[in-house]
Image 1 (cartoon, rainbow, N blue to C red):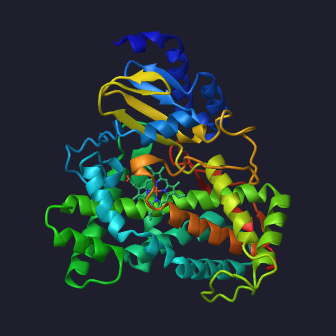
Image 2: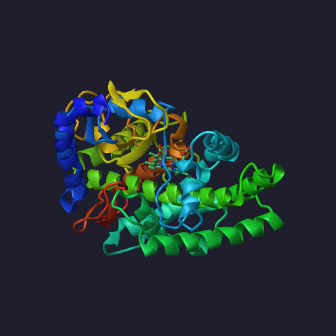
Image 3: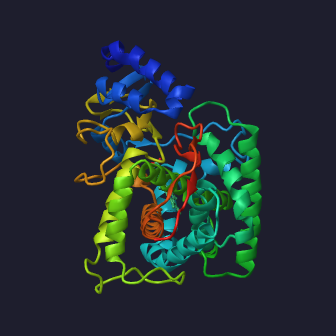
Length: 436
Ligand code: HEM
């Protein structure tokens, strides 16, 4: 009941209505017109006494970087030690002092070097998947046959999860991530998925503890065992589940949204094809070839064009649309709006990325925009640990895709997942056409 709350009483009805409309089926399907309305309420709007809506680019950035704001424990209805509560033990939901402790432990094994070393494996995985698709005569579902398989292959190789489990992981992750939507009580399917994943990882942890390999699970087990108590068993499991799910749910969306945008823009497809072909020294052979350097006519042109495209896809169709925070201390404010301790904030990352004060004509998809810095990987203490891996996968994927299949086209209507927070496609039928 603070004076700040009273001062912004006016817009609160509008913000509350807007959030309701966002959560309704039409809003989930296309939130962007509602984001445009949200910007008219100002960068921060009060939804209720202790609930705020943050939509401005600067405001979301400031909120995510301010250590005075943190995560609240998700209500799982499981009393703190059910399978879904493992996610609350992960780095994603942790506050200081747990967060910096886990972040430095996981950072020790999830290094830039480990990611950079994955480049040849990512190239090979992309080539193999595209070879399989090239052999198909009829239409194929790009989501199932590529957008899901690439990230799941890469993250499983990194973690050391057996390839034969891959197909089962897509529905499991989809069930589990339902808990990240803002739509209330967790479903039994999410609980079953969490239990299943926890069981798989418990088995894997035991196996790697007995016989370590050169994978992330072994490395995390070693870190855990070297200094007992610094990473509890629940934290180890929670973080492994998080790494697996964070490793592909979002990257799958990035790949699917990117291709859908390309299919709608044949001239852009042609431009990217020209750029990637000019930059290539040799046609793809299916072997693990390093990216071309030096010998090409215009070295790096294709990489820069594809990288710019990927950043604009991230801005335009953020795979994570919403982040939440809570005020951990008194006396904070966001964009000059005082926020009392204990108040919760809904940060619309997808809206921030389309803030007209930050990006002119924000609803236009334009890969040649200057200074694109989407907030799609978050910012501050929790900034995505996998962002360089996700960018690597997407640039390699789109480079090879447009280079090999310049005639790729839609073969039916895409089907969108019915989600607000984790935005992406469920299926995207395509015909690859003749290889270029
Ligand atoms: C955190 C997005 C891919 C691992 C985050 C956050 C965002 C995000 C927005 C911050 C959450 C918050 O502040 O509350 C994305 C997107 C991806 C992607 C859009 C793909 C396009 C990946 C990959 C991995 C990964 C490939 C791992 C292999 C993580 C982890 C965190 C995280 C471990 C937690 C970091 C922390 O809380 O300190 N991601 N992510 N992500 N992401 Fe990603």
